[in-house]
Image 1 (cartoon, rainbow over the protein chains, first blue to last red):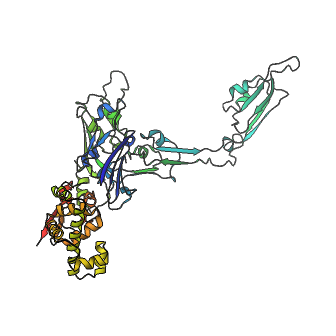
Image 2 (image 1 turned 45 degrees about the horizontal axis):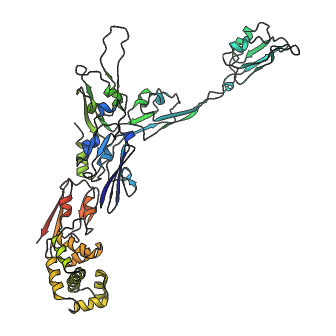
Image 3 (image 1 turned 90 degrees about the vertical axis):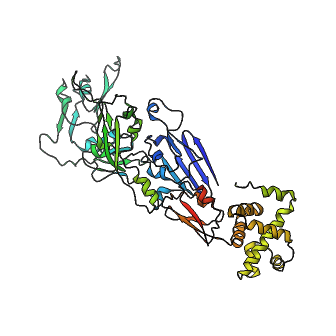
Length: 349
Length: 167
């Protein structure tokens, strides 16, 4: 039996070979330095590097240190990490797939039936975990009409081309020669792009264009309803279950379940406005309020608790102790182990 | 990994063959104990990984020196941890060590696992007797195989194991 540690690219692997092979993986990139692993470790093998300085300058070392002489590879850190930065595998199987281990109940899903692919969640997601791809109908399918250029009347002045809001008109320009004294060889209207607005007709100095929109003068034609198809995908590895997508969605399509419940308090008197919490928070809970007019006094820091998952990263990093994170509930799957239950419950403040 | 006992150097001063003599002493004691329990010679040969004829010789008091048996007897009366470590050092085979210890140890032990057990399985890995299994993130020690070396008790990171000798 032997315990070894390998650190590669700031990622850590601790391995113990015995009756079974236990491997603990730490992915530095996913870690938010919240310190929950350090708090739960029953043998004090984990130490989280101070975050204050780390957020400003790219650190040389991993965000956490694991002492392999102390680590017994029990997997508590892996089950409590709200960011899945730690994972324990026993004989190649993650303990998150084993029933006897308690795990945090957390999820984020987008209901495809309700989603209209507006991309608000994609824009708001602090972890860029959401990808919305959508397919819009062809413009020509939503409008119908007729347009024609009388090429005998057209003098190729190009005014229609310049004015067309849909870039549907194209002049094939040329340098006139004695042999062919014309400024353009042809004028082309792309009917797939044309929206039959009539601007070209109105600007044409020669009345060379005839255009009729079938909708306007004659009332509604049978034009198919615009059909937008697409998909909205959440990358579970990157998602931190902050709830931004749920709050910003105009259609209530996302449902987010958070791992912890609690209370976040911030003392604006003590706060120095150093921005550490703003940079540390994986959920974009904090922002600096901007005064709407000059001279207006605004708080140093603004927080919206709707996005907080109570991981405690801000509290841990605040250099002046202006933030307090209280956890009132830890949501986890049931376990028969008293020790594990006590460990999860001990994270409540 | 635990081996650092003075007796090994004593044994080694008696030449390379000394360990083999002690092993035959241990196997003699084991064979006699197994016979007392009613096992056939064939079964004894199987458990101790010996020839059937050797078993027969041993049981009839042939081919083993009395000095070897005397030393083997001293070893079986060591504290369980030393008995196990020395036997493992002599045999270099985990399965045989388990069988010899099980048949030569008269003492019985009972293990109590406290609620503080986190199921890290360190004890499972440490137990040379393969007496420990994990169930629902809690260790279970089989009293049939535990013979009280207490390595699990000492190494447990949460002090969750208590081994008691049963009268």
